[in-house]
Image (cartoon, rainbow, N blue to C red; front, side, top):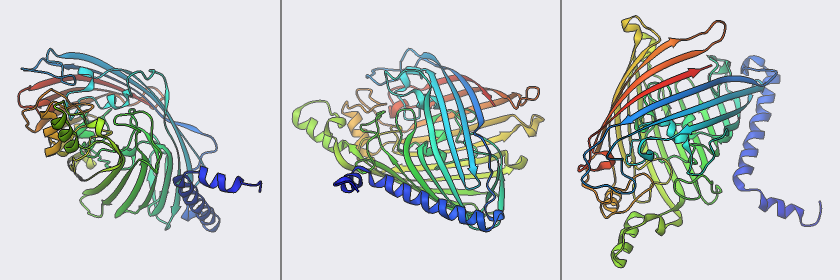
Length: 468
C-alpha cells in the first residue's frame, strides 16, 4: 500500500456505494453457489448477448379549454386555454449473462411541452411531461435507466415472465431475494398498479398513474440513482429503496445520499384467491427544504410575499404513507377496479413530484372482451386531492411553489375526472411484434390548483402509442 492511499480511498468512497458493493458481492456469491449446486433452483433467463427488449414512440396532443379566472398568478393555468403536443421515443435493452444477474440500459428522448407550461394543477394532465426536464435541457437522447439486477432463489418454484420493457423473458424463482442498483425510476419498483400505472397506455393524469402525495425522489426527467432490496414470494413481498434527492426543489442535479435521500418501504400482500393485491407504502425524504410556517412568519415580519425556497435548510424531512389496491373482476383480470389513498405531513415544501399532500383516487378498467374487442380497454376514474394547512396558508398569502401560484387562494379540494378508450389498431405487423394504439382522452378538473375562484376546466386529448 502506498503511504496514505488507504485512508484517502476509504473516505473518498461514499458509504452507500460500499453498502451497494457489499450486497452485490454477497448476492453474487450466493447466486453463484446456488447455480453450481442446483440449476433448477436458479432458473432465471440467460442471453448470450445484449438484446433490445422494447422500443416505443408516444405522441400526445392535448387541448385545455378557457376557464373562469378573476385573477391569475405566475404559475396559473392559462385562462385563455392552450394546445400543446408531446413526443417521447425510447429504446430499452437488457442482458442476462448469468441466470441470477441482469443488466439494463434505457435511452429516451422528450420533445414538446405540457399545456399552460405544465403548471397550475396538483394533478397535471399529461404523464409524459415528467420527462420534460428542467428549462434549458437540450431535447436530445439521454440515459433514462442503467442498472444491475441480482436474484437469489430461495426455493425450486418458478414463475414464467414475459419479455417487456426492463424485463428479460423466461422463468424466475417465485421466492427470492432481489437487489437492484444504478440509475432507476422509483415508480418501477413501488406503487405499481395493474390498472393505473402506465401513462402511455392507461390514465394520463399524474394523480392516476401514481400516488401524488408520495414525493418520490427523482430529477426533473423522473429518474435518480439508488438501490432496492426486496424479498419476493407468491403471497407477499417487502421492498426497501433509498435514492438520491435533487440538490434543490424540482432540480436536475442530484445531491449525495448522505446529505439528501428518499427512503421507501413497501409491503405487498397478494395471497387472496380473488387476485386482490394490497400495497402499503411509507416514505421519508431528507433534503435541503423550506418550511411553510417559517416562510409565512418571516414574510409577516418583513411585510413581504412568502418564499419557502428562501428559508431552506439541510436535514429537513417530509414523510408520508399510502395504500394502493387492485382487484381483478373479469376477462382474465383485464377488467378490474383500483384505489389509491396517500398522505404526507405537508410541513416542508414539495420537493420533487407535485404539490399534493392528500390524495384519494378510484377507478375502473373494462376489457373490450365484453363487446367483442378483447385488446381494447375503457378506463374511467376520479380523484380528490388536497393540501396541508401550512401549504394552503402559504399559497393564500401569495407564495408560489414550483407548480402552483395563483397569487391568492380560495381553498377547495382539486377534483379530477378522467376517461379514455384505448383502441388497438394492430398488435403485429407481418412478422414484427409491433403494436399500435390510439386513445382519445377526456379530463374534467374542478377547482384547479385548489382554487374555488378559478375553473372548472376541460382537457381533450389524443394519444398514439407505437410499441415493439
